Amino acid sequence: MTLFDLFFLVSVLFVLAMAVSATVSVIRGRWKAAGRLGRVLGLFLAIYAAALMGVALALPRRFYAPGERRCFDDWCATALGATASAATPCGPDDGGRDWVAAIEVSSVARRIRQRAPDAHAELEDQRGDRYRPCAVTGPGKSLSDELGPGESFRVLLPFRLPAGAAPAGVVLHHGDFPGVVIIGADQSFLHRPALQRLAVERQP
Image (cartoon, rainbow, N blue to C red):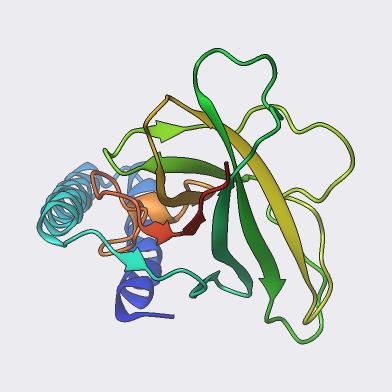
């Protein structure tokens, strides 16, 4: 947990306390007190929003090296590599090229089983364009599958890129909340999401 995470938790408690106090003041007919509390709360939220957007725009994008593990609490993912496929897992050839990205999902939890139901990945090419995976055919693991303490498994995701485009890495999404409203988080509002680079292997 980072200092930004702690500040977010403190901010949530402060907002809840102020909201409860303002509500109690309204119930008791203390309109002036409720108004003051409302103004303080509004000012705090405005300052927090400004800090959230300012830091998001000022911080550089974060990059992870191929094989470097990235963790969201106890759930982790490692971008391994991308291989150009001679087959066409994404369907009939339309002039593009299919790539299969390998991602290792792992858990650093010691006791609990867990899954990331909102986890999904996009493949980013060297020009900065992003692509969603095409439909996966056949059996295999997905990013949202459950895993136990200390377990890991590999996920293979097929993508179709335009001719001449090559993968740069994957942008991994692990659900928007609460990261989107945490100052300094990789997935905070207006901040470019972190890129997990892939080792790219070309095949004829």
